[in-house]
Image (tube, rainbow, N blue to C red; front, side, top):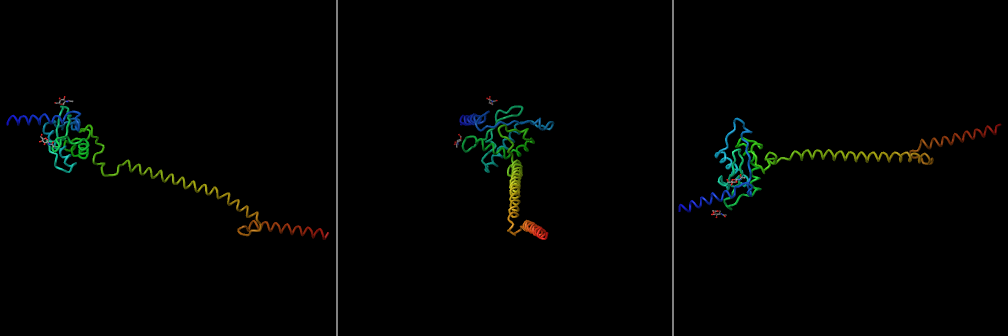
Length: 226
Ligand SMILES: *[C@@H]1O[C@H](CO)[C@@H](O)[C@H](O)[C@H]1NC(C)=O
Ligand SMILES: *[C@@H]1O[C@H](CO)[C@@H](O)[C@H](O)[C@H]1NC(C)=O
């Protein structure tokens, strides 16, 4: 009985390190710089801090899955160094396997602020080496800033192009209209018979014609009288 228990505990002790080792499948490396971040107020990384870390990761997994399936014992730490770096994996009791990388990554990302707060550290001092913190929750849900800037610039460019096109069309119309109108006027002036809007041209021509005629008649009379 005792032998069996020892064997079982030995199996557990052997089986778990298989899941957690550097560069193992679904394992993540964490680097923590407490001294650099907190200076004189720095605390030492010990077993209690490790326990808190496991609890925070379990908390993140529970929130992510919306289930209470992850226990603190499911979070395994290994290869802890003095300058505080270590690896961790999250196991799934129901499958005896590690939880897929993408799920752990998403859960950590969504809860990075809470994890940072628990250790009084920021993203620089508490690094999940393969999980970028650029997609942290604050950005989530709101429209990204670059999209707003992009939209505004696009609007300005569109309005500018529209203005250029419309003003170009207007200018060309004015350019084309001007010669037509002049030609039209000239046509009217030449056509002496048409009266519509051609009064200046017609009357001038008519007057000239009459004056010429009168002069001609007067000259004729003078000639006849002489
Ligand atoms: C991690 O720890 C294991 C067991 O203590 C050891 O065999 C292994 O060499 C360590 N790996 C690294 C990269 O430190
Ligand atoms: C997980 O391992 C335990 C202990 O060996 C075993 O009793 C259990 O059936 C396993 N579960 C699965 C889903 O493989």
